[in-house]
Length: 486
Ligand SMILES: Cc1cc2nc3c(=O)[nH]c(=O)nc-3n(C[C@H](O)[C@H](O)[C@H](O)COP(=O)(O)OP(=O)(O)OC[C@H]3O[C@@H](n4cnc5c(N)ncnc54)[C@H](O)[C@@H]3O)c2cc1C
Image (cartoon, rainbow, N blue to C red; front, side):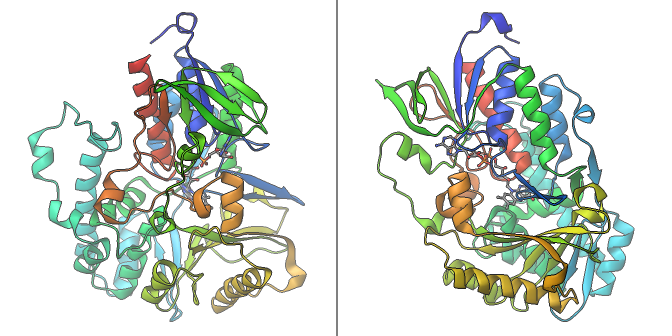
């Protein structure tokens, strides 16, 4: 480890999303002098919260997977995770509601899961096969892709790891792999949803993404007591303790480069000189910062979302995570990815955290975070479009007998792709940067190190990918690259 007093290298991080914050802590722990510049009033980027009348909403992530990655991060910076956040494992992980009135509880325990599979006529052996394929993909990904910079083949990789990798399955389309693995239409629908975790379509993503449901099943679905934003509150305290300079309400306009080397950044509060800049903002911003032409195609970007947050004056009979499926999933994906519109019949995700944690709403009340996928767009949503989407979402809830009359709605807040675009500076409000369509987008995310000397990237729109655990991994990869270079 570099001694703090020996390393005077100054690092500027653009954006205080999870990736920026974790990298700031890692670098400050090993002696770098770090400043983090955030355009908003609060830290956390897409992990953000909103409170009103005693209801506390997580407006971004609600599902935590791979808790070991969080644990590893805290250990790496010399901290004990349990002194900062309390992780709670959820079982069932999710309740799925189907259009025909049936439901499936997705249990983390195999004995209970088997009963649910029996209910919908799925062979347990098929579920076992899914776990077996997923495990092989995960094992190799963990030894390569997830822990190293793009394109670097680690030395400890063994021939055995390469031989047992299910190449054919990972290269066929995700949807084909689901069809090949399962027989029950309901289980197929559950599995077809997973590519939307990275804002992508099951038809266009490779089978490699089977790793997503595997990770969720093998490592569980977790919640942070008090709300996911507790993570950011804890990390902000650590930033202060570690003397990271936090500059809020400050927009980085340009990255200054001379002779292909970083010299500084131009911000709304003035110029700062530095040799090392880490971009934690949506990767589409890089060209803008370099005064180059924005050369992006919205079709390459992941989905955005329509979000309805409701504070309700009563308890709602739902699990923590719930999915209410559309009748025709193919048509819904065609609406999203081909017709590029908010679906006629959207699948909705409902997070009901009071099922686990009474502290996030007043007594006998509940707070619901409801989200439907929507294409990323820079077109402004009209009031009529917002009202239509809201009605579709509320009608979906009626289908499972949840009738939300005006009189029980205490708090209401709506977010459209326009909000995500403006709040997080993400292209068209896309939530995960480029989508994972095709081999190139899935396997070759934007690298953590640029050709310009001193310029690095971190976060969900870069390697190894979107989602909180991979963002934490990207902070490790970027830190290692800088440690090696300076
Ligand atoms: C609605 C929603 C639901 C999600 N659900 C889940 C989930 O359940 N599980 C999961 O694991 N992940 C989920 N995610 C994804 C997860 O939140 C992200 O992958 C992760 O938080 C991204 O972190 P990041 O480091 O890429 O930075 P970001 O969160 O993208 O933060 C970037 C920061 O940069 C700032 N910034 C931008 N431009 C500038 C500028 N010019 N100058 C200064 N600052 C700037 C922004 O304000 C922002 O704070 C969800 C995301 C959203 C939005």
